[in-house]
Image 1: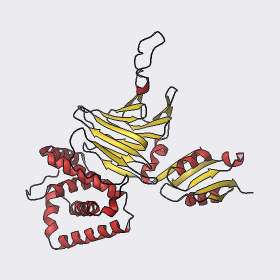
Image 2 (image 1 turned 90 degrees about the vertical axis):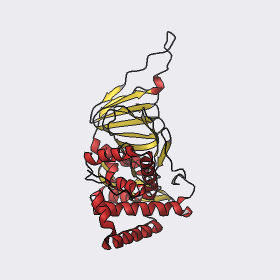
Image 3 (image 1 turned 30 degrees about the vertical axis):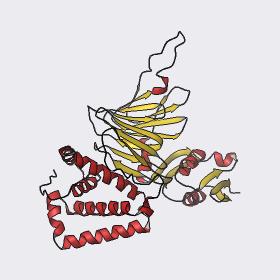
Image 4 (image 1 turned 180 degrees about the horizontal axis):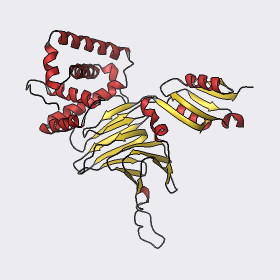
Length: 365
């Protein structure tokens, strides 16, 4: 378990260490317990952690920018020089890992540089909030563009993986942890906190996590899908809580639907929710940058692939094309042409460019 004994070590250093440590594959329950204890020591600890977390999320979405790459290499070189000179070894012994200390230093350097250069920030959805103080009840916003993914560790230790073209609002209070999925898709790994329920709101559906891992998709206004991987969730349709009954007055709210692992709830507007058995590997494969399809209609596969690319695929109005079933594993981060090349190699299909950012799939005679 990690402790900080050097009083001169800055809060920023400690927060950066925890940002790196919580995202590590070998992060243990003891580490998370120590993080919670550190966070409770001083409100400034949590404020700094959230500031670096926001900055790191923005940097993460720009890692291919040449300026960010150059800054990363420079930060690594500086840290290596400090390590060689013995200045990093003390920090490494305090935190229990030289690699974690090195990575924490890189995080600080990148976030500081990113905030300092206005040309990186711009005025769009990737802009880093200028307000760095986080108080209970404030809302944090996380957004990804088409083709981007991001993973956020929340202040309570829960982890949210955000898929392409998604918008998430996070609002923590003393009585509730509320996440609003305003569009897109996110996967939640929830840390248990009996005193503060973890709730995800997507459209008319309100998902109560009961210590669990689950996926919520809301990329169409008329459809919300909840897939449970581990644990339990309860799903309430909040739109039906205040329906008038035929006899007058207000109907009692519908009973919540409880899912078990391997089930997916499909909630469409103006119809009762449906619960089906699903393939959780296929439903959540996007988290690793891959899309898994098992005998899926080509139209459904194309719709899915189009979520990840600005270059769109269109199917010819041909029953032979539309009747194809597709199985395979494809990279969600590549261009549409890579997927098309795979289809042409495996099926009697060929691509025709029908627009600047449009490719039509036709039957190859």
